[in-house]
Image (cartoon, rainbow, N blue to C red; front, side, top):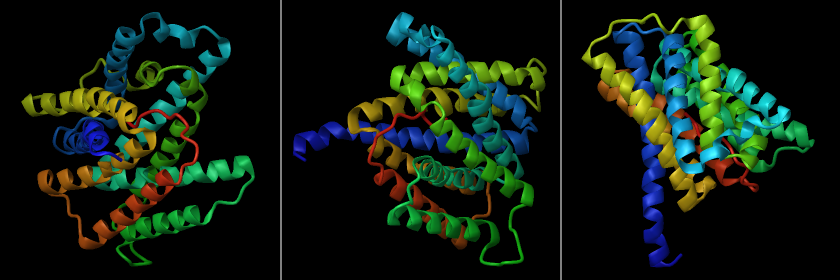
Length: 309
């Protein structure tokens, strides 16, 4: 790599890191809203999807004009985007936020990051191929990281509730589905349009059950700031920065750099909300981050995937 090329990639690297940090901090903002302001996770998810989806559709329209509606032309694509919005988008958002409400943003984010292990398992079954050595190593590291994180090396003790562990694993499974299901759509349409429509569909569908028109929790200046951060920085700007970074440094490098998201969630939870995070928790976190790095670096085909929001 020449010096000029290296300098040209610096903006992409900074954007990828910024998007990951924004995502991580948004999880801690959600924890703050749940613990301090008594907001309901389902209510917050509904409005995040509706407002974030609306902004992303407007962004797509400004960039692509009529092409933003292309996904609605064929019945097969309509079915796929409806499935992505109603099942994929709602599931990945609600399981993650509910997991935060049961534990904390650091633990929930780290547990969700074992999702790539399930993606590898899915493609191994689908393609009828055994995982390679790197993938076996990633699985061992992921299981070791989870064990340390939720038990602190004790076989008869959980340091988080069983419900928190269950919803954390469900969050990882939802992330795997969210990653795999829309691959075909993302080969044909822009990530902005697919993610935006998915969020809108999911938000309006979920609103049938959550009654978002009724305010949830205590609303004051702090609530507004945390809510605005989740929408603007944790959704819109993080999405835009990630897409821009992919165009500059490529999807694999951008995804690898986004592995700092759990670290940003952990650090902000520890220093802002005073979450107890011991040395053994950091070791478990590092093992799971190494898992993500191994699986990302090992990708041989750069399949399109939705951004993580």
